[in-house]
Length: 314
Image (cartoon, rainbow, N blue to C red; front, side):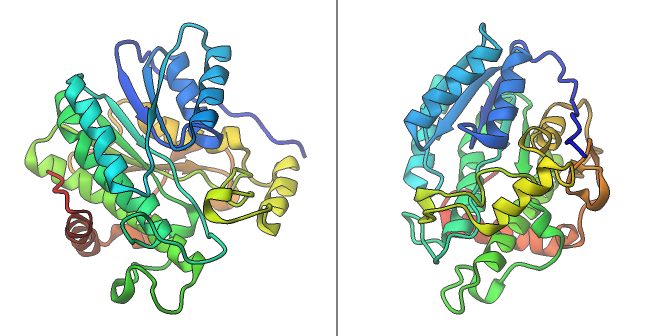
């Protein structure tokens, strides 16, 4: 069975400004391309300038009139996050959409960010938490939306409160699961706090299902010299229509980012693939997974994230 093709009808984005992290390849590139094609001005913060320039060229192939701009960002450095926030805030232009999409998964050994955080928690959650905080004034001005990306790994498990940084008995997959639970809890708490504080910012959440992206492929930045056995299997399954594709995996976040009136007051709307096992298929709304419905854990994580990053969100 060949992979099926699915689409999301993106409303006109003319006059809207979007920031998409992780937009230099894979899912993020798909999201950025669709937004640019719909008329949005897209800001691509990237760690690797060469990959970023290649991504901009690919976007302009599909949307020749697109307004796309590169910015420097390393989510594993709070200084880099703060610098990007300062540059955009200094420009003073409202922000209508922030897609917190970038991430990394299961490096072969425990690594740390520039600030000493476990690499997956620091990049996938804390970097995005700090970026959202830095851009909140622009998001409030634009009555914007923040779309966060979680993972199917977050369907079970919990935050490792006794050792958030996994300094003892490191388990790469468990640390990845924790980081993606953190992304989901953050999205839910952002929705609640925005509603309670009258910020005017909408928070949505998505997961891509399972697809052969670069997460488990060779990645020098996490010390992985070759593709994992897992990504080779996923490629085989994807080619037979048994999981998603990189194109279909981008659609839940794109839907979460652009659907009109996605949520009721104070609640986070959650989108993912609708096929068997939720690993592929057309995108649509889903019920929030149990680990992401823990309001006390979400509030606690918010406070801990402010303490760790040294930034206040709100």
